[in-house]
Image (cartoon, rainbow, N blue to C red; front, side):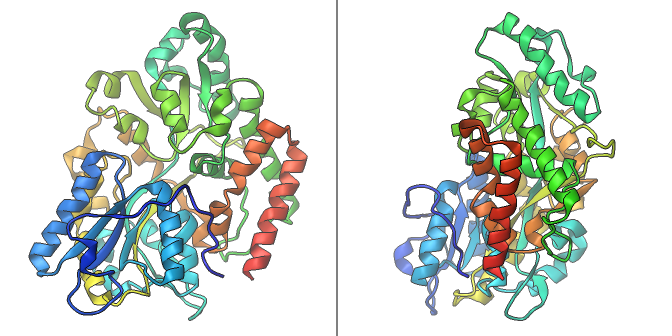
Length: 451
């Protein structure tokens, strides 16, 4: 199979960074620049950080980089088009790569194996981060390193302390049990509307075909111990316990919208919709797969430290401590590259602890480090930070995404099965029973086609 990805929005041409793209397309040999496609930063500091790292490597190596910063919404389409035209860059980073692209490209032999980059750095990495880039290659039949991890994140819950106060509650009163936790937010809506007006909702849960819906529901699957795949990568949807758990997770996620606790326009949110709803104070709380919402307020100390909170997930419905699904942001070398040695040199330089520290800090702690020693920096050790502290605690009990176990699950992400089903529940009144059967049918078809 090829990528099989749907285009994520209108295509745009990459804009060159440190060098002009006229110097070479990165697939030819000779003295042309190393061509790097990099997802445009959520914050200007994030883009500035990769520019500085690239410029520093140029100075150190004597080689040049053609750095193109590309919007996330355009990246998959750019990769798909370039793959067909055999004009892929040498190096690529995209925030959706770990979910929808890279595991499948590794399977298809379209990525360069990078063990010689990572093995000298293994002592610095969190073992779980390394585990998350050990993909299986169908050509060789082996698992190996096919990406360099640079950042990671869990699924976070953010809320307004100030709005909680308006509802007569505080974050210290949030229950730890699953049912009590979600009932707390539902119960806050009526008094909050009396204090702040009728247009505010207590739960900013996306119900659209956005990546946030997909990621958030993956955490609900974990809450209900729904193991769609075994660690050997085998599909387990035919097991009665898995189907039962899937139905329970679907019902629990969808009921917030059905009960009127979620903004009606959540069915049309893009990947920024839940952030916008929270930051414009139209939602009391939201669930998000990065720390981007509080990170965007970091310059306003009153808002960042006192008004916004990141709160821990409750225990699972069965009372067990929550285990957190982890997104692992990673950089790859495409096998079409004619500059693989230079590409590996650049990735080895990028993955030096001081460079990853600079990049994650430039990202305003939207993502977290993949190297434990980086957490010793004062940037991460600030116990007064109400967001990073909670996010780091989540890393203590985590698991990789299902795509690591079987690359076919990447197609589940690419087609956004969960987003499509949630939107149908919300807009077409699809029953939970029908939604469960649809999920089983669609995912089984994806795996059958893959095999």
